[in-house]
Structures are given as structure tokens and as C-alpha cells.
Image (spheres, one colour):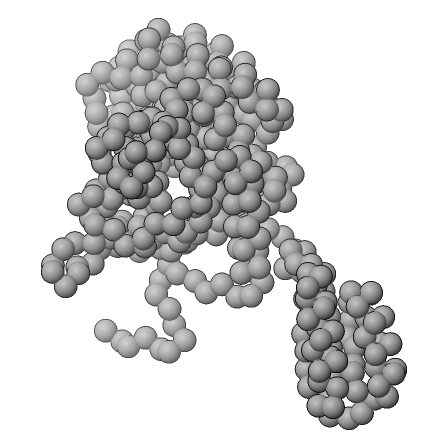
Length: 396
């Protein structure tokens, strides 16, 4: 194998240059501050976990996990999400804390994606988890909070699509009873948004015309609240009917939050996380072809750690949002930098002025230069520059 050059890096990872870091920290700061105002406390989990616990409970397929051995030969994994580690903590370190528990986080996660061109092996997420509440109110809170975070970041035009895993699973089981492979194939088409592949596969199945019609009708279940009425005409199963009723209740709560303009229903959604059990949702920003946020209900995850509890949450895809944010990084800092230049004899006055301006939240860059300027003129220039908040000034 050819030895990599000194400037090369592994596939799937990237360097964040200063402008990107400004955006990343802006997203992190605004989101976590928003979550804190909603009562969510920040938590930090280890980068590395045991494979037999968090690794096995992760939403990520086993072959996409980064695995390593410690000195005792125990298999470890780099965290592939933060939801499973938080479930471990709630079931152990927070086992005496009463529900509901609200937690937030910002972290890098790792997924082995060598076989998937263009996918990242390391990326950042900022998220929130609401644990111990099974109601539609909790689902609506998670969705409303995700909307508030996107607004805090600075997005104005975006949509949050809401679906329910119970609906699609119930419909598939009713029309394709016992055919696990066919159901999995159709779910995969929906995850990939492969409408053509979905239709072709449905028409290749040995099922009656009524089943084909119902399966194809799913593709049209996208839009406003009226989607619930159309969906109700396709199903008779109690589980699917309950899923529709739950979505209607979630929608009503979100109307009370005043965020209906950002909502749409999408009953073709199945989610790509294995631990989802109910309401699922994704956020899309205008002109960006991929979701910048995803979330959903996962009522069975905590029982794997010995503490049964319903839960819901979401993660902002922070790295993707960095790429989605347009414009110069100066849009996210407090004005353009102020440049203070000084000679050695006026160092104390110059650095004192820099300290004062930084205390006001301004960005100040200092530089020692040669030459001499009259002290009075220099101080006037500094004072004027402090008021202007922009440009360069000299001392001495």
C-alpha cells in the first residue's frame, strides 16, 4: 500500500477552516441556547463506547461502525450517534431522576461509509432528547423545538415533514402479510426516495389489484392535514388508525405553538434508524436537497439498558447546515475586525484600548509596527476607531 502524503487525510473526514468553524460554533451556540430556554440540559458522552452495549443498541448497521480493540481485547466502537449513549446514561447515572428528563448535546459522531461515495465518516450533530413522556404533546414539543432551533440559526424558509412508522408498517403487514423481504424492499425504496423503484417492485408482487392500489396510493400521502383523511381511507387496521389519530393530535398541538406554516405530513416516511417506533420527522431548508434535521420517537431503546421508558428527540445535522449556510463568515461575528497598530513606546496604551474594545464584544487584532506617530493624534484615532467599530488605527 502506498504511504499517504503528509497533507492527505482519510476518506470521509474533512478539515474545518476558520470560516466553517465560525458557522459551526454559531449553529452550536444558538441551538444549545434555544434548547436551554426550553428546559433541556446539556450532556457530554464519551467518544468511545463498548460494542456490546451502546454499539449493539445503536441505530447504525454493524458493518458501518468503527470498531477497535482495547488492551484487554474488548471490542469498542466510536459513537455512531448520541441517542444510544444518552439512553445508557438515563438508565444508569440518572436512574433515580424522575421523568420526564430533557437533555441536549453537541458532538461529533462516526460512521464507516467507505462504500458510499460522498458520505461523511465523521460529522457533527446538535440534538435534544425528551425521555419519559409518551404523549402527542411530547412529540409536538420535540418538533416545535427543532423548528425554533432552525429559526435561531437564521433559517426562514424551511419545512418539517412528519410521518408515523406505525402507519406504513401496519399497511405493509396488511397487504404483504408474512412477506418480510417484500416489506423490507419497499421500505428501502422509501428511505432512498426511489419512487420509480417502489412502483416497479409493487407491480412485480403477486398480490391482488386492491393491494397494489393501496400500496401505490401511499406515494400520494404528502401535504397538509387533509392527508390524514386520505390515509384513513386506505386502512382498517387498528394500529394504522391509531397512528393517524396520533398525528392529528400532534398537528393540533403544533398549531397551538403557531408553527403550522412550517409543517407538512409525509406518510411515505419510514426513517433510516432502526430504533424508531412512532412519529418521525425531517427538516428541509429551501434549495437544499437533503434533510438538515431528523428525529422521531423511540419507545423501546431504553429497555435495552434496563429502564423502560418512552422517548422522542431530534438531531440537527450540524455539518450539513454549515454547508447550507450562505454568505461570508462575518455575518456570524460581531462586525469586522478592528486593527490596532502600535510601536513599542505606545504598547501599553494600544493594548489597553484593545482590551476595552474586546470587553465590548468587538473583534480586535493588534500588531507591533515600526515608525512614530504623535501620541495625541494616535489617541484621537483610537477613540474614533472605538466608536466606529471598523477599520484600522495606529498608536505611536
